[in-house]
Amino acid sequence: MDLLTWTDIITQAFIRLGPVWVALVILFLVSFRYKRSLGLYGKLFDSTIGMIGFAIVMFWVFAGFFAGAMDWIITHDPLAQFSGMKNKVPGTPLRGAEDGDFSHLLCGGDHLARDVFSRMIAGSTIVIIIAPMATLFAFMVGITLGVPAGYYGGRLDTIISFIANLILAFPVILLFYLLVTPEIRLTGLPQYMAVVLFLFPLIFYTVLINSRFYIIPVRRNLLLGVGLAVLAILYISLINEKGSRISFLSFIDLFDVDAGLLTVFVSVVFVNSPTVFRIVRGLTMDIKTRDYVAAAQTRGEGAWYIMLWEILPNARGPLIVDFCLRIGYTTILLGTLGFFGLGLAPEDPNWGATINDGRKLLSIYPHPALVPSFALLSLVLGLNLLADGLREESLKD
Image 1 (tube, rainbow, N blue to C red):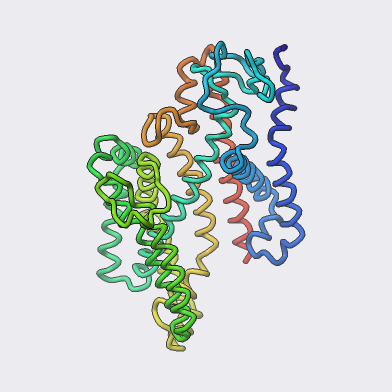
Image 2 (cartoon, helix red, strand yellow; image 1 turned 30 degrees about the vertical axis):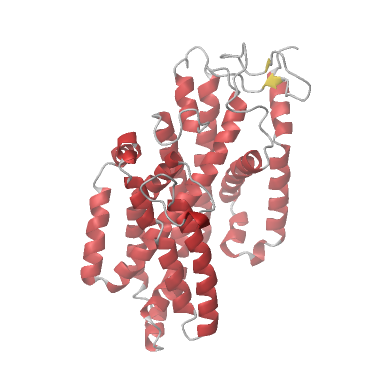
């Protein structure tokens, strides 16, 4: 077999990514068809910048989903090593390829003779799981603490703000480094932090439902009972680890979370929460002076109803924009941790670790580092463009 030309490489990569293109086309067609009834999401398609950013982000979301859930797109096992493929250039034919195997390494081989293309796609699965979910948890923590702090003020605001400023005063990268080091993990600190931080979604859900359906006890009790049961099972499954310092109710432990993954997840939530808290607190202090908040107070609405159903919905524009930006920020942090070999397993195909592996011979064989670098750059760029588009449209409301 001959070495593929760049035209052949691009064509083969385009074909391998076929499910992603199909999913993107369907998503955009449906979104354009119903954009007038989709609120802020629909208005996003009136912004060229927003659409470009959304397309880039969803490209990686679909790529990670199809690679992780369906085992599609990737051409070879991202951990497999192939004889004679060390540092081979893109388009190199695979030696001894059997029937049914993909015949070439589209993006070449790395210093351990692994498929760079497959490692790039597999790395997207890790990013689209950790970055949005960790950011969502950070927003749960920040909103649950920031809204009452901004609304009530006084001693509550002073105490929570002091704790947030204390965390923010510490250099972020150094704080990350400390939290994910093996010595800290052995103390069980990340698990103890998970016990506290993962409680906030349960608290937020409880207060949200109770404040909305307080005068309809039957519906309130049903929603609280079912919702809290599901969230409690997920909570126990997340914090439990057999043989660790925290291990209880193992009969309802539905899944195991890798210790390194949990550490990275908790670290991201812990570092991002104070910043989200400050943003939410500031928005609440501004919005609580509006006339519709005074009208709700005049009607005799409860404080939590006003905070969660009057103030919070009117802060959604800036919060959604910050959510997108913070996912990009988290993606960079994950890449930084992977680059230094912290948190996830060393052989894990995360983009940071792949870039670090490729940089050692960058001047001779640039492709193992450039491919994941482009992936990381494009995802963060897409998130920034998406945030710009959402900001542009939210200001028109």
